[in-house]
Image (tube, rainbow over all chains, first blue to last red; front, side, top):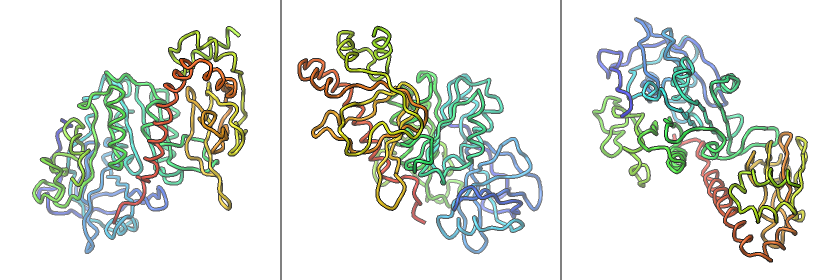
Length: 283
Length: 154
């Protein structure tokens, strides 16, 4: 199973605490990263892969993965895309404004368990945000892993997240970074094609590879299938699932995914546990 | 020629091929280099040569009036560029342009078609290698059609 979830930082997991927006960075046209600090108390620790419920007062609450460095105890970072009323309000939050926050919730990427193995970190679109804390943690002690590769796919060059960091990671000797987009004009000199096609472009030993996948569900399905086809065992493939999370503590059932509640048993789940459900329609 | 044969048979697309077929193929092969921005071929042109990339990157492009060309895929080291040389009327269906300094093996398609017709074992061997590449690219193109990174419903 994926790493055990930490307990939420707030005493009552259903009670949002006020957090101030300290800074806002625009990542793409409709995606921003917010630095959040609590109005009272310290910033609780979190494990890579966990999420918080962010509450835009009077509008609503949405689950958003932590995207910052887990070693940074001064703030939480959340990377948010405006897709609905709540997320649009969060994206539009100005520095100094206050949001409600519950969490952190959910399971974590099995970073420690991946030590000694080749590590494939595969992200699509906004899925790089929930993986970034794991990347920070891995790169802080890269000598503990075999070959490390970050594979990232997006719709087009303008929609790629964290481009400066991708370039910085790619310049390091201890990690291979490959980025692809679905479509581009000729001014883009990188790869064009789907994420699974990147697997051929990096070296890894399938018998000793741990893969962490996050992105749109279709991309997860095709990538996991390609990894299994390459010989990576399903129990060493971990996916972050997205479902309609409401309570975040496994009570309300909105995020039920077969026998799992994604908020409590996930969002990071092992592929061998969910492969059949991932292939089923309407689950 | 010996060196070209050894290099050609070391290409991923031809890995493990019968050396006798390799000797037939090398007679149709030449080394080529394309500078960044240079076209390997253009849409509509006769597909009389196809390419195995040794080094570099090639963009496959579609063009339409009033907009920049659309890059639909990029290909790199160890990959094959072009299948229209196999299918009548033997004309390219898109542009292929070097994105970086690119070295390739160019295989004379007419020469190879004739050799495949004369030796069906060679023809089958080429088909056996080409078909998985084509199916893989068709499946990738279908995945791209899904536009999976588009905005989810609010």
